[in-house]
Each structure stands twice: as structure tokens, then as C-alpha cells.
Image (cartoon, rainbow, N blue to C red; front, side, top):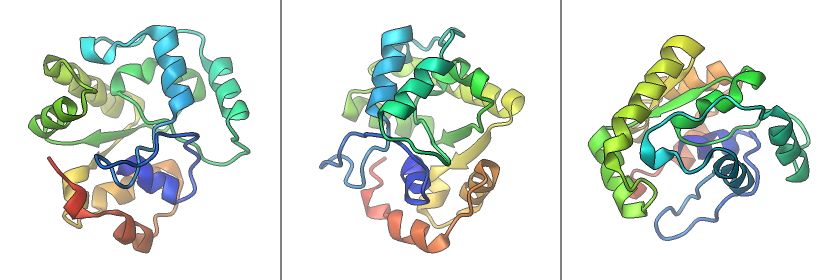
Amino acid sequence: MTAGLFAKHGAWVGPCRKPDARNAKGYFESQPFKKAIIDRVGPIVHKGILAPEIPWKQTALNILRSNGYTGGKWIVKHSAMYYPLWHEFKPRFICVRRDTKAVAKSGNASGYLKNTHAIPAHVEAMDYVRDNLGGVDVFTDEVVRGDYSSLERAFDHAGIEMARAIVDEFVDPSLWHY
């Protein structure tokens, strides 16, 4: 939902998995970035280990260029475990926060988070990003309930003006399963 809101405000997300019955609004996760990250550092999300700092900037720039990026704000949605890849870009991190039990249910239902024992490592990584790298938290449960204050801080942090009408139209509490 958070990445989708940034995309709806004009941030480039690249080629993404299409909406489906599980996620009617779409996934807003760049498939070329996802593949390249896993190819470079492996499927570490389920293990709860951080990606190593590796030379990545040129690869990322090549992905942007070859997938239609022409300028402006861009985002990459992924696990906090991959934050070390982005140091060369001096990014503006947005940490999406949810109740960890809801994360576990969603991860199990989707098959994306097979090892829910890794969730504390993800939370620790987001805490590190927020506390040491200037990340900003978005509390999605609050957004779904109509409290956009954390979302407004994230948009401000990213240098994008948030249009409440776009948020009102995009956020659909009936799609919030967990």
C-alpha cells in the first residue's frame, strides 16, 4: 500500500507484478530490482540476515535505465534486510511498520516469508535504519484507519507533496486482511 501510494504520486517503481485476487491494488515491487538483488546476494529474507555491502550502484543504475526510468523520484520496495545495498545512493528510507503477528499471517498466506522467526531481525534492521540512517516510519494500520500523519511525514521526508485525495482514493480498508 505504501509503495503504491508513492507510485500514485509519480514516483517511478518500474515493471511490477500485476494486481491479483490477493492484492487488488498491485504490488509496486520492481521485478527487475527484486531479481537482481536476489541474484547478487541470495534469498536472505527468510534467513533474517543482512545483505552485505557490495558494489551495487552501477547495477542499480543499469536497471533503472533499461526499465524505462527517465528521471524524477524513484523507489525500490523490499525487505529491510537489503538496506546495505543502497548506501552509495544516500537514500531516503521509508520503514513500513505493521503488527508483527499480522506480518507473520500475511507472510504465511503469501508464501513470501516462510520463516516467521526472521521477523525480529527485520524489525531490528528497520529500527537501525530509522535510528542511524534517518529512516522514517509509516504505520500502515493507522493509515488504513484514516490517520495519515506518519504517511505525511514519509512523503515530506521523500520530498514529495502528498495529495490527500489520492490517498483517500487508493487506501481501501476492505482490502486490509491482517
